[in-house]
Length: 260
Image (tube, rainbow, N blue to C red; front, side, top):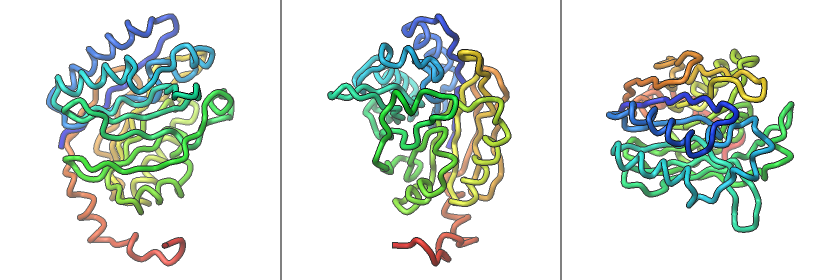
């Protein structure tokens, strides 16, 4: 299984259509990958809070539509990161979307833990209230988004629902880069999952993003880590690593608290 992490910058003043076209060219450079992953809210720009309402879109909107085309063209699963989703009642969500190689939407996740510290996300967006796991060609896959890394109970629920791979789009600031490295490694080991985390880069509204997108296996081995620039990082992974580690070191089977 080949994974491509596509780090994206969201510079101010760039028109949405221009950004989608530019990101499409980056995604084209991931040809040959089985799973292509992008960051959180790259289309709107995570820190462009005043633009959330204007750049919100339904799941039938232009960003998901672009990802569906990319997936079909590459013959790959494309996790587009997340978009500011507008539902039929006018509510806004931070929604992660996985598109299958045939162009269908295979999985969605509305971010549960919207961020409030030095951010207006919690003010503007509605928290999600559901978790789901998708069956894919490379095993059961779930998703969390950015700040969710700090809440292990959410991750344990995903594992209880069968997740073996968890994708994490993010817009994690450089000021907390070491927290990013810590939590991505910790969640992978603690939950015995293959963790695929793609972070944003560049500067948004004066905030520098950390980059350092990572793939971490359930033994804690960092299989790939990107730098701080826009671009594509590719690595090869054996999806069987998750059942192999879980069978060889059965931490999850030894739980005595919190099991239903």
